[in-house]
Length: 320
Image 1 (spheres, rainbow, N blue to C red):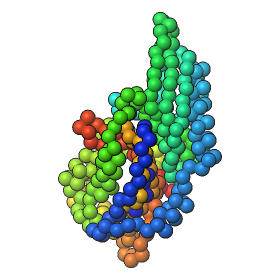
Image 2 (image 1 turned 180 degrees about the horizontal axis):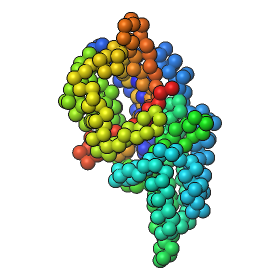
Image 3 (image 1 turned 90 degrees about the horizontal axis):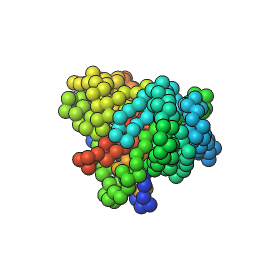
Image 4 (image 1 turned 90 degrees about the vertical axis):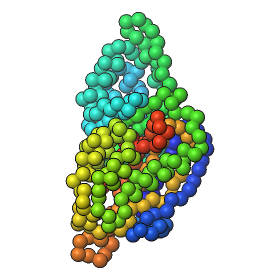
């Protein structure tokens, strides 16, 4: 079972629907009791969490205005990632520091107004969506550069209980507006295709890996529970290639039983979307007839590409 919520960056249309779960070749609904248990273990962000996340975003804005690179990076995870509008990737606080030093060497910010419109998530993973209006004044010419964009922040609560920015992705507002209503269905289909890329009991083949990789954008990032990153389709393929010719049970020592979705909601439409939820990889350990339920939280950022297909841009999951 995967309980998944879906929210798109802009707009005001709300759509709710439910996808079936796939279990041993059958299509079933995951029980509401399992969903409730998962939500208790990995709850949505509390009011306290939301305020802490808003405070972090506000503090980074204030640090931009001061030109204080060290203060900005205080709120970033060591393995943090910046996803640019063109989907180029800047990884780690060292590289982010270099970008900031270059930007603040060129000019100083006279305005950095950020609003947070949504904060959603599950357990130690949260997504914050908002908008930024900024003005950068060139030091050499005194020219003012205005910027108006949408922001997606993926936060991760660290071992010390502090929230840190793990991913920051931004896009100009003109990129993220005016998409048709059928996108909500297409996004749900894309997530469903990613979840069910191989049937229980089937041996993994190169074709399966190709199908799996097709769900990701070329510069996609998989962020593992320890916050290490696997970047690009080539590396995503390599991570799975070692299991070719094996079933789930042969690869992991477990007999695969459940990997499914339940309850998806969508709000607004754009060329970017975020999804979050609870994964359930239920299985039978080798030599046991007792079902073991493995619940985990995850979140992702999706993008609508030039071929009008929705693909995963960033994906993060967590295990205890």
